[in-house]
Image (cartoon, rainbow, N blue to C red; front, side, top):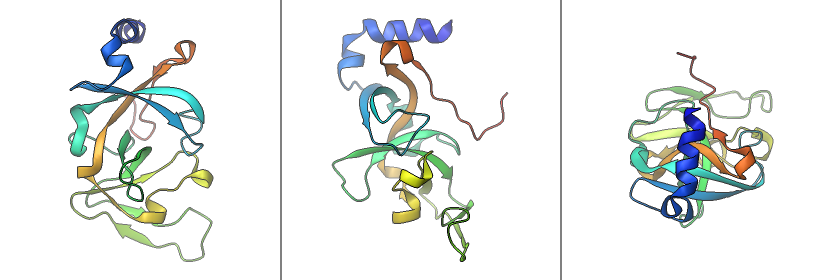
Length: 157
């Protein structure tokens, strides 16, 4: 019920849905890297800017950040490691050389949910938390598909 009320308010607020505000932004998605969480094309996600620059994000959160490869583009990935965490550098089972690395201070390690089709920290390394634009809260369009984006890596309360 809460989700329905929130998303109905989002739909009613054209400034929130149609473009960026100080607190939230709607972003259309493209690409298969976050399947099945976010669809290849057509999903629009609601991003909370309260988490910009990585403030308050944790392992399992889905975030939007400036691409390390193309800084003018925003990408969406899931945080797998925070500063001080040890993460597997390569895709599990894909390499004989399974090295663990420690995420440096001020950075996070991100991957797509669809590892086979994701260009992420396994390719370009840790992402500076300063590049985080916000946390993805929900899919808001198509309207019939609206839903919260869950943190599948944290235990349920």
